[in-house]
Amino acid sequence: MFSWIKEYSMFSWNKKDSSSSANTQAEELKTFDRDKTIGYFKRCLEFLPKQYEGNDTHRMTLAFYSLAGLDLLGVLETEYTQERINNWIDWIYAQQILPDENNPELNERICGFRGSPFSGLPYNPSGCRESRLPFDASNLAMTYTALASLLILGDDLSRVDKPSIVNAMRYLQKEDGSFTQTYQGMESDMRFVYCACAISYILDDFSGINVDKVVQYIKESQSYDYGIGQGPGEESHGGSTYCAIASLYLLNKLDEGLLSKDKTIFWLISRQESGFQGRANKPPDTCYSFWIGASLMILDSFEFIDYEKNYNFLMKTSTSLGGFSKCPGCYPDVMHTYMGVAGLSLMEESKKLDSTLNISLKAKENLLSKSVFKRG
Image (cartoon, rainbow, N blue to C red; front, side, top):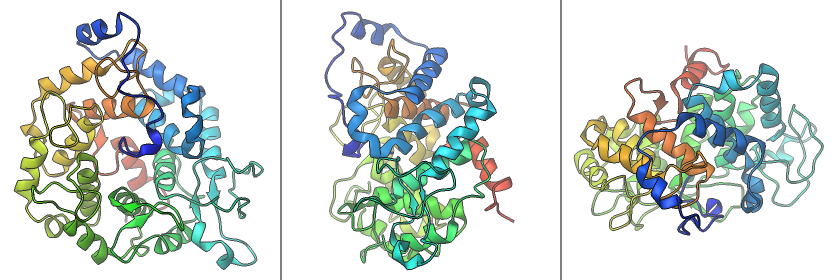
C-alpha cells in the first residue's frame, strides 16, 4: 500500500512520457480534472497494464487505491450498482484464510487476508480453510487494505474472523517490536507496524500486539534529525515517519512515543519544496503530499504548509490520462493517483479524509457506528 514498497515500482517511473505534449500539459494544467481522475480509477478497477502482472499477489491493495479514490471523490455509490458493490465485498471475503475446522492449530499462523486468488483455490465468498502453496498465507498489508476496502464499500465486517486475525498477528511480531508482513517473512519494519496497529484499531482489539515493544521500536527508530526511519539506525523517511506517527496515535501513545514532537514537526515541514520530498535532498514526489501532509495533520500542524505550492505541484503531476504520476512528465499509476487525491483531500475545508486510517470520514463513520466492531 506504500509508495516506497518496492513491489509497486513496476514501471520506470522516472522515464518521461514520450509524447511531445506530455511536459507541456503538465505545465499548463492548473486545475484538478475530477472527471478524468474518476475515469482513471474506474479503468483500473476493470483492467491494469501488463506491467502490474508481477503484483497479482497484491491485487487487494491495488483495488483499495481505486475504491478509496472513488470514495474520496464521492462517486463510488453513484458510479456502481449495489449488486456490483456486493460482488466486490464477496471477492474480498473470498481471500480470507480461516482456521481449519478440524484442527485450528494447523493453519492458525497464516489466518487473515491474502492479496488475491493466485493459488487457484475455488472461489468461495465465505473464505477458505486451506492453503495450497507453501507461501499461500495472509499478509498484514493485504489484511489492512481488505478491512479498509470493506468499510469503504459499506460492509459491517460481520464475516471477518476477528479472533483468528488477532491470534495470527502474535506470530508476526518480532522481539524488537517490529512486524513481518507474512508468517516466516523476511521483511520487518515500520510499514507493517502501522498495518498491525490499523488492523487492531479496526477490530477494536490490541491483544494481538505487544504495545510496549511497538512504542520502544518507534522510539529507537527516530533519527538525529527527529524524522523516523524504517527501523533503528535507518534514514529518516516521510513514509515511515507517517507509519510511526499514525501507529502511536492509534495506540494512544503519541506523547510517549515521540522524543520531540516540535522537532519532528520541523523535520516534516522542512520536506516541502514545491510539493513534498520523502527524504532530505530528494525531489518532490506526489505521494508525500499524503505521507507528510497526513503526519502534520495528526500532529495538528498542517496549517504550516504552503497550500498553493503543494496544489500547483500536484497539478503538474496530473496527466492527460486522468491519473497522477510520481513526478511531472512521468506516466501515471494507481498508487500515486490515489495519494494525489488524498493529498488534495487534506487541503479541502471539508476534510474528507481520516489521516490515521487513510480512509474517508464516511468509511470511518461506518466503522464507528455500523460495523460489528463499533465502539460503545
